[in-house]
Image (cartoon, rainbow, N blue to C red; front, side, top):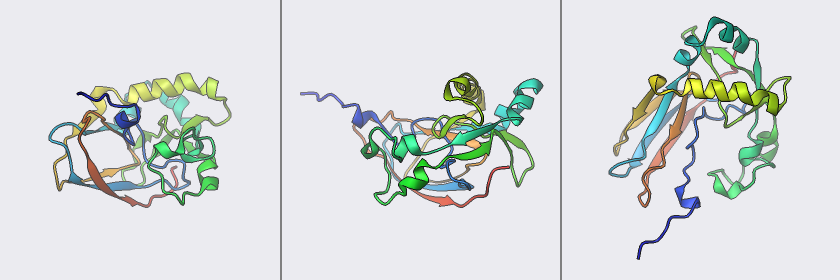
Amino acid sequence: MKRESTAQELYVTGENWHADSTFMETPPLGVVMRAIAVPDFGGDTLFANMYQAFETLSPKMQEVCESLSAVHTGSHIFGSKAPRVDRYDVPKDVDMEAADKETVHPVVRTHPDTGRKCLFVQKTYIRRFDGMTEAESKPLLDFLIDHATQPRFQCRVRWHDGQVLIWDNRCTLHRALMDYYGKSRFLVRTTIAGDRPR
């Protein structure tokens, strides 16, 4: 008899487009991830190039974005406002006060190594633009995410056992694909400390 999958089983951490831990004052510089065991098919990770996302905006929209900052918080993911904390892979000793804190970062950041400008936006941790309500912020935030995650700005990584991948958290978004129902995927990660976006 075939058993139907539950909604919980169809969820994978990181399935939405995001950069890691931008609610922190100094978000991670990057991530090193190693595949321990991956399914025969599925479980790929997508990346979006936030340099290209910024550079292909109109000059006027670039100007608008450079004038804005965004409010980042983890409160709705694993803080006091999270609807189901047990759904997420959050350590039991997570600092709720830190999760609930709001941190303001620029919408366009300059990469400290390359000197290039890139969009620094995502829906996972951004609640609103600084000085605006969530309702006022939503249309522009939706547009920027839709723009940034177009297929022309993406690359797709197909994992294999033992593979090591390093990515720059400052100028990319990423998302895990949940298309390996009934199979397991086990990756380990090391997060590299970063600096405050400017």
